[in-house]
Length: 518
Image 1 (spheres, rainbow, N blue to C red):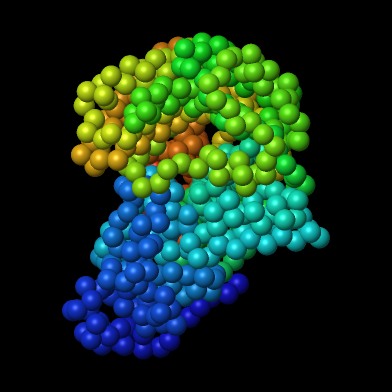
Image 2 (spheres, rainbow, N blue to C red):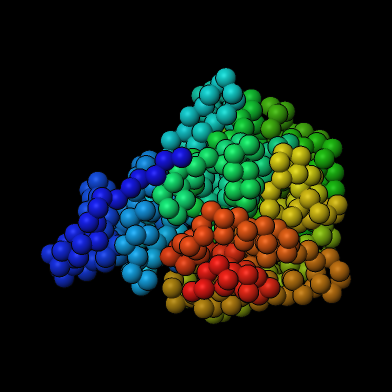
């Protein structure tokens, strides 16, 4: 284990530097503490181009907060020094709170940036290497999936990872991580053979099946509750070109689409090479209301039988082809620089719930036309097959904390994905999204088709994905957090995202014994 140590007399020197720099820099004790270390040239304030470039690189406008400073890091040793410094310099004020940013693709404000504190920017810690002897890909958290697939494609291998090329590695994997390959290899987190992690005291540790195994399991869905992940080692597999693309249809094909989706989900184990993402999208600037299916097949086979029901439906456009994983994930990348709301739930593979959700969204179109100030906005619902097979594979590969192995039912993972350009519409579209979520959730409960699981990577503010894993998994997360972060740094000094300490009332007593300040 490695730990970066601070020099003696650190705090006394810090007080002197604060007097010299603080007044004219609008700085904080923690920013100036970082400037006293070897990281001094990697600390950027609001008046620098590097700071502004970092802010502008966040995918959603809603998470572009303005920290007092940003520190850009390029190694685990950098991260160790930064975390140690921030913890030691902490004055218990918001100025010394910090956030961890890898790809910057979340829609939850505060999860990957912080207002007035310090953002640790890992976007430069982004390399991918492949070891053919072990068939393991070592990937840094700031990498985007398109760069991962480009590098691994040169070796004719792939990993179970993200499906949109602009999404970052760190957040997707520690949140679970759906994938084109989930029916073959499980979710992205299930292919992790090792995490390299910087703990709150600055130690650099490895977490795997034989060393810190409890941390290894907890990080497979437990997000930012334990430390800073600085490298993820993933099982790789041989992979050439895939067949697939996006096929779009008139919304009037919805009944047939839903029937085909339900049947596909029920039989995904029969051909785990097939992946399907149905998207029901209204696009305002062209006034179109379409159903689009992202069809992907991991073998180089054109028009595989798994998608037969969809071929029979008349389409208005298709991009199906043979292509690389890099090419397909670029196709599924979403437009950046808009306001966004992500909300999610999971329900049984029941056509009635899907039809109910589509009908409500269709009913919102005229309301949006009448009320929205934005010219460019989209209302989109995604219904993704989420069979029990995913949980079973995860259990076979060492387990995770998601709790998916406890159900034998097949499910649909539902994402509400609204985007718009004008901030004056923020309240309107957020309210619309929450109304849709509430109506679909209530309907699923009424017909006994509801399911507790909330996918963390799609969850919005106010949702509680960690609690949805089940009480025993949440207690396990709390126990691991207490063990590896006994001072609660990643609960209080890193307040953003979904926290074990905030996830369930039944844990309040236990957590207050450990972290009296929470």
